[in-house]
Amino acid sequence: MSVGTSNAPGGRGTRGVPAPRQGTLTGLGVDPDDLPDGLVVADEHGVVVCFNAAAARITATAATDALGQRLEKALPLEDLEGRRWWQLTDPYGGLAIRVGQPERNLLLPGGREILVSAAYVRAEPTGPVHRVVVSLRDTEARRRTERSHAELIATVAHELRSPLTSVKGFTATLLAKWERFTDDQKRLMLETVDADADRVTRLIAELLDISRIDSGRLELRRQPVDIGAAVGRHIQAYVAAGQPAGRFLLRIEQPLPALWADPDKVDQVLSNLIENAVRHGEGTVTIDVTPSVSPRDGDDLDNTATSVTVSDEGPGIPEESMNRVFTRFWRGSKRGGTGLGLYIVKGIVEAHGGTITVGRAASGGAEFRFTLPVSTPAYLA
Image 1: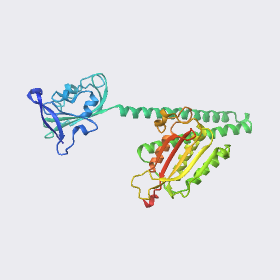
Image 2: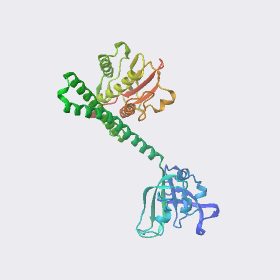
Image 3: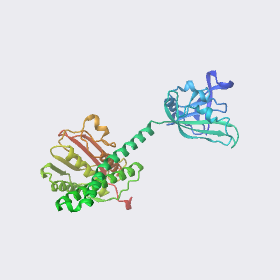
Image 4: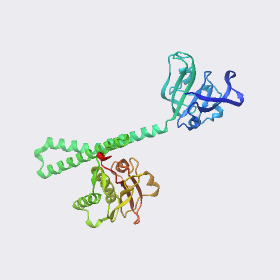
């Protein structure tokens, strides 16, 4: 691939070469300014003949200032040890078998870090370099990913430390002093160990879910799902655990379309949303199950779907936090938990081809609404 150029009016480049300006990528009709990454191309004389808009944005250098300049002047780079990059690599006078430079972190003047890779274009394998093609990428997106991974590791370490310390402490105590405790004391310790083991198991399950969601490998085993009955089971479990039956209001609008989804994953979504309403909300927790319009464009199944809305009468979610609710580690005003639940809920719903939104309920509390398309079982898809 080569870059078409034309002479730029006014001025000449280094070594008597006319100062060029960038054209389109020959043969493809693609404007370099349309590329998402920075593109810098120098000709056989080391003169910059292409400096696209992304390169100008990343380096904070106008294309008009870079075109026609020597590569090392238009793009002054240093490695992390302060050495001048173009003198160090010497693309035009270095090894004749070298084909380029792998991506690495380099520094612009002022110390700003960017990702740089280069390709050396030769007419023949060991011939002179005809072009140096440089790709530039901002490191901010990678830094955000690295920060997210670091936060995840720190959160997991913190969440694991507490239950594992408890498990270790109680088991060590029981093993060392078994005869000194009454049966009731032993039962209490073992129940605590059992609860903490469940907590660790849930955290590991959350981490596995996040891994599958981020890599697009979340598997769905679609079956017929009676979502009204599924909500009813969750309500009965809370009532059996001591919540007053009058705190829950379930409203189902019939007829509902036949829903094919992964029942375990749907249960996970319902469990998280209802638990949040019970723990963080106040008053009546209302769950509405209604037929809806499929969130997928061009759906062939009569464009039908099922929506579930979970709302409470608590203080709700502040407006400024609405856009962060489904991100990792969001916990709202109340601490506790890993802050990963709603991130996983969103991943599960979207894996089904559905959508989920958050807003303010008519009663003033939080309102979560997710919509799942009717879909088809895996063996019919």
